[in-house]
Image (tube, rainbow, N blue to C red; front, top):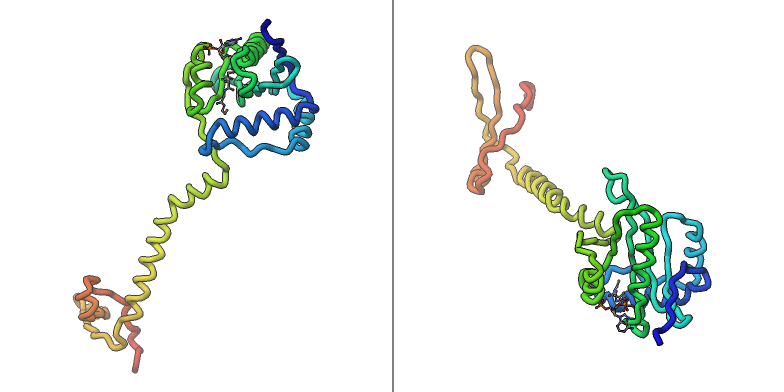
Length: 232
Ligand SMILES: CC(C)(COP(=O)(O)OP(=O)(O)OC[C@H]1O[C@@H](n2cnc3c(N)ncnc32)[C@H](O)[C@@H]1OP(=O)(O)O)[C@@H](O)C(=O)NCCC(=O)NCCS
């Protein structure tokens, strides 16, 4: 006889069981997983209570012979910012090893499809990690094609990487400023001053030439003209 399967909404008393499912899911997703660390059963219970009356999301659990063996999180969201339709998205779909291949996975997806129909949602989406081959095969057989890749990181990580991308420019600027200051510091104390005149108007220009500067490839450095009264 086929085992009895039931799908229902989570209740706060299920907190420990769903945290166990979460831990299994993290192990199954591998060391590269970006899955959040499992919360404590107490924290999970408080969150379940908080969302009890949330009409836009449902955490459902699947029982096999009266024991919780799987879960899925269903969310109602606009399908796009330009379309009026709402879609149901299934996240964190997971069935325990001991409960697999008894129809629990299909029962969880069937509940999502029933809710989508009830809410007049023409589309259903399921999020699955790219590396979860079994889950992806299972979903593909149910008609779900791949629509995109969801990437995940902490806000802090993204901000740090963005800052790092700009850092080299800033460092280059600071380093070139430091070189200019160092070159100025090396200039001789009594530079050769040339006087030039343009037309009738006397025009004094101090041109500093220092042989070592030229040899270093920096060329000629021009400083502001000395005032007429200087040194007199
Ligand atoms: C994908 C997953 C949800 C499927 O759950 P499941 O409970 O085993 O799913 P079902 O039992 O409904 O279906 C699985 C297969 O068993 C078959 N099956 C169902 N009842 C059966 C029975 N009594 N006897 C034999 N086969 C059965 C189904 O027909 C199905 O076959 P198909 O894939 O060829 O269509 C589950 O394997 C899972 O959680 N995988 C891990 C997901 C994962 O990688 N997560 C990582 C982090 S998110």
